[in-house]
Length: 86
Image (cartoon, rainbow, N blue to C red; front, side, top):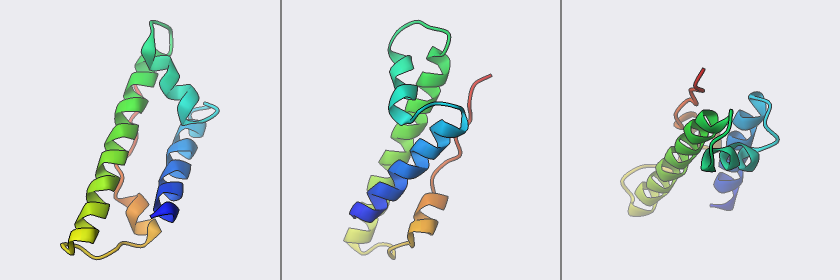
């Protein structure tokens, strides 16, 4: 489980860095108050929470025996694509 969590955290950080943020934390911090980056912070935070919710569902399904354990690469590929606001 720890390796899947680490891979997901790395994927989320890499997505933030691709938009020139330091990491996921600095990006979502901008969502909490009015500023020129708030829309991006809100969109990223919503996407990040969607990824984590999906990850928990995948792991619950694996533990329940309703699906096979995906490889880490397959697991990450199931995450939605981040769509940044313009």
